Image (cartoon, rainbow, N blue to C red; front, side, top):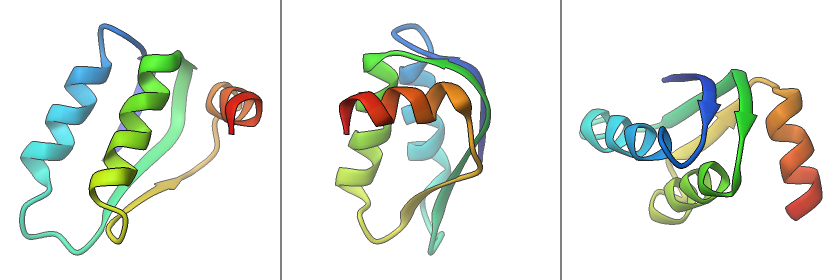
Length: 75
């Protein structure tokens, strides 16, 4: 699955819902972050939530300056 644009208070629930809807029956849940242009604390929390609930299946791929910057600051 590919996320794009802003991942924030308004869009984080959509990201979580998309993964919940599409996760059944898949061995891996991969989120391509290449096209994310902004992420706030709720977006980071959504990604951490996915990682916490699916530690063996969830992974991030790609690179986003916006996500990298926030993760560098908080993790």
